[in-house]
Length: 53
Length: 247
Figure (cartoon, rainbow over the protein chains, first blue to last red):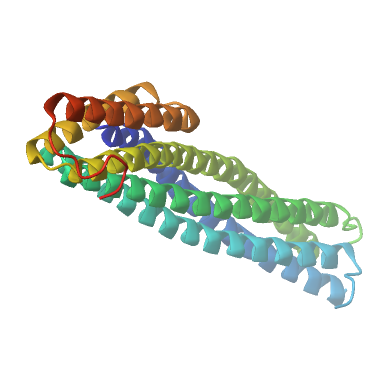
């Protein structure tokens, strides 16, 4: 067994964890984008109503 | 662009800003994902080269495969370092988004509600709930981005340490092998190369924590190998084409 295999084993868990973290982040950002769009729409509604009054 | 005037204007402006930052962060996540996929491919190549070297055994071809493995690890390191830079850019975008959402919350809080018509008051209440939900999701994203970036940096550090350490040492072994090529007796060449490979393994084992120390150790290996070659030449009287590290 060579040193490269050892280092590969040491590197891979970090890469896998980073990939998983990135997938979680992608999902949270999708939610955040949806929440942002909804909040923006609510702000437009509130703003339009304020202008009408 | 004119400054937003009413608190509702401020909220709308800040929410647009937050939304834009989140879209940018999402694009950067896609970039980072692509970078990590490339790093993962290079890591697979490094593993294959390393195993190839193990199957070949001792000799120049094994050294070449190990050198290739080191180069692939250098690619892994480079791609992880690039991905880490993107990770930091994502965190900057998320901080900007968080600040904008907080400012939007302040704007919504400043909307005067006591004299509002009931429908409008409901709209403002809905807006407040939406902004609070957004704030929670954005706050959740920050630590995930930071943890992901730390993992990528750790992967880069390990890969870089390996590629630097081994490439330094392999250069020394390559020198020994070239020296061996200059000697007339082929079997003696192979013996020296094998001995150098064994010394390389020993050095790799003992010097894994420091590239600097590894360079020094590899130098010792190289000098010891030269010394042994000189001793062998003197003892056997075999014709030697040259004693230096050239063909």
